[in-house]
Amino acid sequence: TSADNPYFARHVANLAWSHCFGRGIVHEPDDARVSNPPANGPLLDELGRRFAASGWDFRGLIRDIMTSRAYQRACEPTPSNAGDTTNFSHAGVRRIRAEVLLDVLAQVTETRTKFPGQAPEGRAVQVADGRTTNYFLTTFGRATREDVCTCAVRMDPSLSQALHLLNGDAAHDRIAQGKVVPRLLAEGMTPTAVLDDLFLRCYCRLPTERERQETIALVLQSPDPRQALDDVFWALLNSPEFVFNH
Image 1 (cartoon, helix red, strand yellow):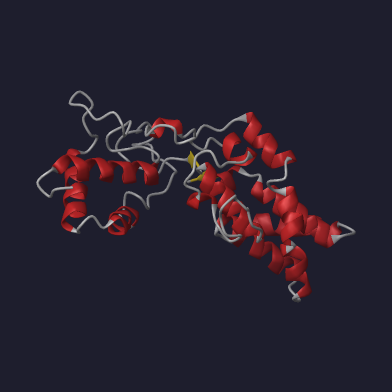
Image 2 (cartoon, helix red, strand yellow):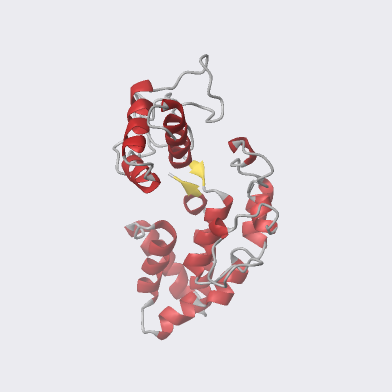
């Protein structure tokens, strides 16, 4: 970690960039060799320099990346950059990591995931032991941490992942346990307000006018609006917009 050693700072900066973007400035992040140059050498040099100059402030490094214009770009390409996969001209759609996705499911449904040796409020991202896992983390590709290669993390979507969200306890049982919809209705919220709350929870946005009108029409037609809103909640959790960063 000497300030005179540029390689450590550059490598950590590249790992952080890869974690945020789904692709490193040097790709793959572990493939650091002369014949695999960075997509943007000056950018990687500057990130490494700022990281070292900050006294190895990792939070500062992440802040620099996430407040950049590159990180905040939309995922919809333009005609001129549609074929670009290396220069970060638009955001890449990528599946959320297993640990983060499990924590997000717990947060939006107001439930908990108990791991051995952790407090009840502990999160999956805090589990350091790769041998401590569950079916969800295994199915969604969490690394066993038996080696240091970033390739041990599996990010590809699969049929088993979709089936687990559709039919397993990851979504349906958590909705029943958390009782988010019954609580919101008991607080006096209208079905439309509950619908808006569910969209904000799952997508960090309000529904479009078409989404609101078509969905609320189905809810109001149901003999049990509470169950209908629970079904909407389940549908939101099973959509690509929830499972993927974009």
